[in-house]
Image (tube, rainbow, N blue to C red; front, top):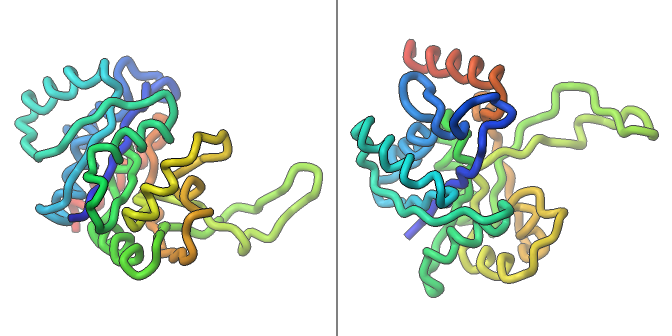
Length: 223
């Protein structure tokens, strides 16, 4: 069985919102619900694990009832760091299970099913698969000047991993340079693959992101 751990621990401070950003409405539905639905549309058999702060879980259940959202998921408490949150999600997966596990940001609701499929497929061939997009702006290293942007990529999620590799990586102690799950796992893999990400697979953290997401969603509806 394959799994996805969706990390949704935001507080919405940069949004200036009264509720956590994953619960804000996008096209009339909470962002987190849209994210979950994309993965359920990808595979009815996928095990979906949601990592939420404990004090947000009752509100989430109220939202599910209000919006008649019945997609089956498993919920686990979030940790003090993303590393701990993902580790908590991993603990719900049996220690002898094989397959692929993805980790995705709860506030990236607009990824395509095709991207999900390509990331899972990449991790079946390699040990780790990461979606990336090119850097379009000029990059400058402070103190050293401009650096060639062709040497860099922006990293997105879902990041997919072979389960046995993922377990080993998350047995190590937390370090501050763990900026994403790929950075946790990179020293434990021999083969990494990259797939083209999507410019529309944005992470919603600020009001301008919400406006962009609404425009993307409106365009999707017109197709």
